[in-house]
Amino acid sequence: DFNHFTLVNWISDRSRVLVLLFSVIALIFHDLWRKKKRLFPYGLIAVCFYMFGLLSSEVGICILFYLIAYELFMTNGSKKDRLISLFPYVAILLLWRVVSNFMGYKIAHSGFYTDPTIIPLEFLKEVVVRTPILFLEQWFNVSMFLPVKYWAWVEPSLLSVLSPAAIIWYIIVSVLSVIIVIWTLIPLLKKSAVARFFFLGMCLSFPFASATSIVSGRLLIFTGLGAFGLLGLLIDKLSVKRGITLYLLLLLILIHGVLSPLAFTVYGMIKNPSQVDLENSTNFPFKTSVDKSSVVLTAPSIYQFYGRVVEERYDRKPLPAWLTVLSAPLTPVKITRTAENSIVMSFINGSLPHKKLRPVLHKSYEYDKLDRTFYRDLSHISNTEVNLPHITLKPILTKDLSRISTLQVVFNDEAESRLDWYIWNWKTKLFNRFGLPKMGKSIILEGPFDR
Image 1 (tube, rainbow, N blue to C red):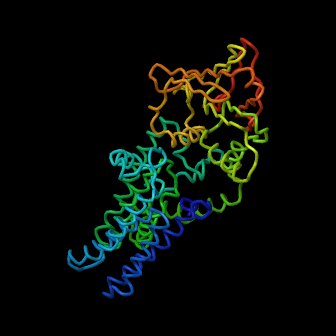
Image 2 (cartoon, rainbow, N blue to C red; image 1 turned 135 degrees about the vertical axis):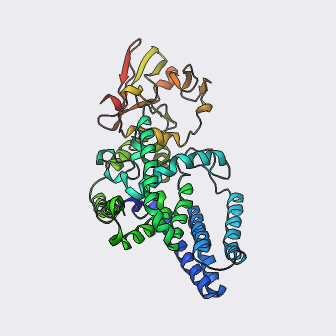
Image 3 (cartoon, rainbow, N blue to C red; image 1 turned 60 degrees about the vertical axis):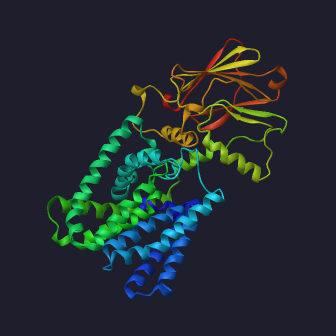
């Protein structure tokens, strides 16, 4: 449906198609193994496909939760027998983790991903905050109703474009949705072991979907497995539902059975505005002499430059001797020529505008979140002078030492002739060449909130 289409639509995310396929096959053969009491071949096939799932993506861990739920609610064996049946999966998981860590396949010190084995307390905090939000997305597809102009990268994601104040209300609504859905499911959970199987698998999968900071529907691949099983069981009992439960079920059928497929179809027919912005914001004019350096005074996102430089290098296109991106502010920047060989950048109101000026929805919040995925902790910011071959940077911090308030850029006469200056124009959404102001003069560059 609309909330799970990215793993098919986005080629970089298709590993999730493989992990889901292998994991479901593992679950099917585990069921055959336990019902027919034949470890060979059914048990062996189940364990092999579980391993294939882990090798496709680490999110394959989540199928283990469904296997645990299966042993708890779908079998009648002894506790010892159930534990033994789970042992091969746990052993493969531990082996996979040891080998992947030894080979360096892990993420650390990034705001994009929170590794529960490295920073468990931080992970638990993220789980508490993000699980209700993901629950709301899974059951009600709220991002589907986001206006097209606010669609975020790489898919419509309401959370990505909300102001900090609005996010608090979003969390409150999410918690209420959890309470309402669980209250609706309680009668079904009491009667059906299959429902308890789907419910436990879904709930245990939510924490691992919470490990990624950019919350979106693509993370809900395994929670969706349980949620749609529960929805199917609810629909099967539709004729006996009454009152609020009936209305909620009809709403879910409308969302997932009608609106979601239609929205998915529309998405495939139109040009995603976010993709257009992404193309423009990475469409930097790299065509320059290799003995010249490019200085980008303002950009929509520092994050997006990383991939573009690699792409240009891969295509063997000429790159400037140095490419320096100085800022990605969301508020106006004042450029002042303080000397023949220096300018001062003053960041008006900091990165984000004053709380009273912040709109509830704005795509620039997304840029800010993406940049922060690379800088989880801002404690590395200092007023240390940075000397580069073409320029020298002298930052001055705010009183709370959390932000750079002004940045002096110093260059010598020889370097100035070899520097190309650029700025990002929020109106045209293109990079433009920039001429430095005259001595003692200033120019104010608009931010996205000025429009």
